Length: 300
Image (cartoon, rainbow, N blue to C red; front, side):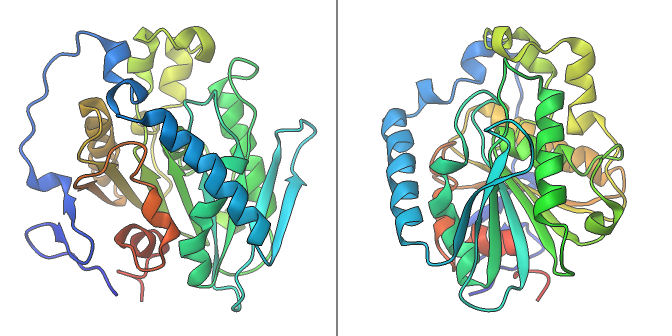
């Protein structure tokens, strides 16, 4: 199963539609807390979260080749899990979880390794320290350290993928001021931001900023949309058509800006998906999202 783009912007074999094919009207946001409230607008949101925990735990119990809690720092949260494919390794996929930089850890997402593993990719899933104990800038440093360590060895390609806050983090890692090692940067074949937040300035107006403790200077510093991307990167931004309008706008924003700065980018909207179920298809080897993440649709 392959996925190709036609001139009209339709992604076949999975029904992902290029966001550029829509004419969106953007109205002023009057309630920023509501605009970024995913759980309040998704029926059964808590059930999705409970299912993530259950599916991930079941996956870890049956994982044949895995290494858990590999430390990359002194804090207990500074560690990652590694899942190995049964076939020879073709590359490493790092998946960074979301949770608004203040919730969850790597143990909720193990099952999302399945699609990449089936294609022979090694999957790394890091945890990181959370707000308010650390700043968003320090979380960026955590993920940088995790990726530098987990991907230090080998010549295989590396894919960085993340959901929600994780989408922000993997995008932030390939900004011009990155602390990723030069040898590693040259191996990154694709960055996939799923439902990512790429401009942090709107979050200054949210009640959750009492926890995030962003100020304007840090919001600007840590916004990928306000940064210069590393030369030669390939970035994809994907959101669900049933997401909050702000997430659809944030999704298109980064690809639009970075395309104007010389990056190879694209932004897509997945029909019938919302913020919580859009990642489910990463469990499937033949899903459009898995294939696109690994570059099978345009690299092979």
